Length: 84
View 1 (cartoon, rainbow, N blue to C red):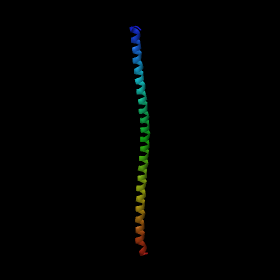
View 2: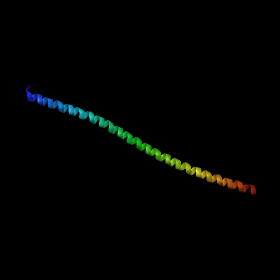
View 3: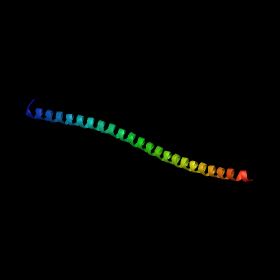
C-alpha cells in the first residue's frame, strides 16, 4: 500500500467512526424524544385530573352551601312549629 491508500483508508475509518458516533447520538435523542412524549402525556393527564379535582371541589362547596341553606330552613321551621 502506498501513502495515498493509507490516507484514503484512514479517512474512511474516521468517517465510519463519525457515522457510528452520529448513530449513537441519534439513538440517545430518540430515547429523549420518547421520554419527552411520555412526560407530555403525563402532564396532560395531570392537568385533566387537576381540572376534575377543581370541579369536584366546586361541587362540594355548592353542596355544603345547599346543606347550610337547608339547615337554616329547618331551624326556621322548628322555631315556627312550637308556636303553631
